Length: 235
Image (cartoon, rainbow, N blue to C red; front, side, top):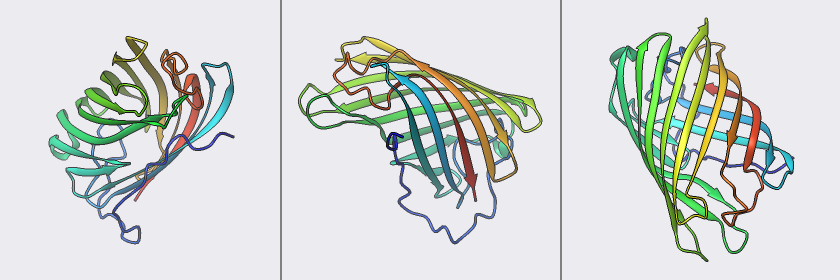
């Protein structure tokens, strides 16, 4: 099994203190930020095909913590809620985030580290349907080549198809600057089952046309096609 894709670390939280109020069990109604004092730990296991035709397994880990209802530590970054939906009701929610968003292993030299800034929104029509959207700027810090950058534009859907079962879908267009490729995309679709107020489980499939070898990176753990499962716990 290949090593962990990324380990998103929690920098401040006391796991001995349980949050008084957790985010909504309904994924459609759930806010983009965690509740005050809420801790989320999640893991995923994926299997996919790389650009070099190698097929492999990959493990992903994630942690996030709600410093307040409006400010969440997520991985190596912060997300702040600019506009809330009262009582997780219908309407528009807006957030912004800054921090590390990924890395690539360079074929020569050190890793390429991505630092991003985004504005992400969610519009909830009712308890069963929501649309997500966002734009993000990513600066890639590299050693042996000119630093690269990109703009990302995303559109997603959350649709309850059965009690506590939600269909999720997302498409992201990447406008690449100083890469060999001018643009690329990521797309995925999945099913989330909110087992109870604390546990979520799901499965997903995804595709991407980003070519790491063409752009000077190693293909390891960068999948053209992948499928996987995940489990999330909030307390």
